[in-house]
Length: 422
Image (cartoon, one colour):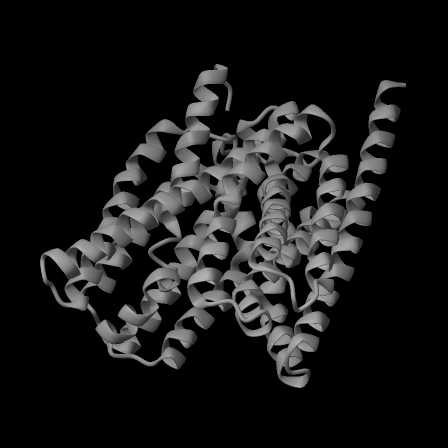
């Protein structure tokens, strides 16, 4: 992705819009769960099964997604994902049966997992120069969060206007929100395809008898044989677990500290606005000082902040809780904003970078599988604050492990740089 600095930042902006546009329709339940249950006449258990299908497909497609991003131009994959997310959204807007909903969610899993995720990460990794990896991924994650927040604000305002001013039923108001997300995704699809340069996938290599055939097993051995890949994947895994802990803050504050639903909602919404701040600042700091050292420092600070939440007394006021929650949120979003920049430190060629992303994603995002189970088990086995303490404490241990992994990666990168210069 050669080009001027302005053009590269413009392409980053387009990719950020794409990242912020592709998931809100799929995760509509975050703001409209009750309305979805009412409109589609399904139970919370049935809706949960739909998201379970989505999660299984995500896990199953991480590796194939990386392989595909090495074979097909990422801009084409991202554009296709946006368009098909919208097409499936149109089917979703017809309020189909529960059986059809399962197919829709399976389709969303494919077009946002198989054809989108690794393509997006590879596109950004190749777009950024070596000394811009931190800021580009920081802008991607922070910008994506900002786009999602703005879209959600518009959607909620439109939903309220439809209900209260136009006097429409819940189903009709919800459809207006669905159409908003459909249009945004589908309009972005052609913009992405024509605005983003080719990333140098294998699709660009000339065909012919002299062209080397893909050797996925050999490529996998190359990737898995690199200690840097494992360390970077562990950093993502541990950082993602710290982020997962924030999902339990609402119940923790309300059940353990007795805060009202309004107070809890205010605190957790305020935490969401830490995403663009934390991710972008961390990205620039990583490029300015050192990506791996910055990640280690953020991982340590986030872990200590979460540990502080465990030891806070039951008498802690809302102001203290707000400060700690915002600090944890700031650190976790900062970690998310920078941990993918470690890919550049793994010295993986562009030809197999997508496959490396698939491997790292499979390891890094595996908490999606086991943390919900661990959370449920601990909260049921140890009712009250002790259950949360066990859960958060387990993640604190993993946070310190991530700190050590980031520091070890820093040592390897510095050693490699020293050998290169000698």
